[in-house]
Image (cartoon, rainbow, N blue to C red; front, side, top):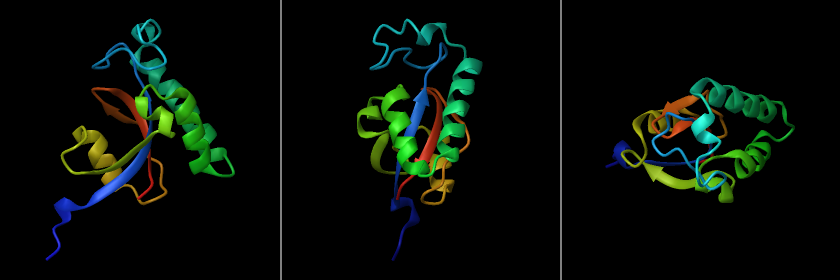
Length: 124
């Protein structure tokens, strides 16, 4: 008996926070000085510039991890954006749905959550 709800995925993400984010601070910006000035529109623009750089790279997965480690507002940046394996119910719903919908190796379009805006690379 195989229960699909138990399936797990693994993904890296690159998060750009903005003034509307649930927690407007990050490891790069502990006081939130920059994040609190960043509009959602600016966050999306920054994110999509990173995505363009990633998809144009010879090795998009390596470029994704490199940019996530430098630019992601999530503490997972220290692992190249790697969140490790997770299953349904562990992440915010839009993030979870986007990750489960991706093929392994695929990169999402912009995903909007309470944390900010993300691009996701499904790795398993």
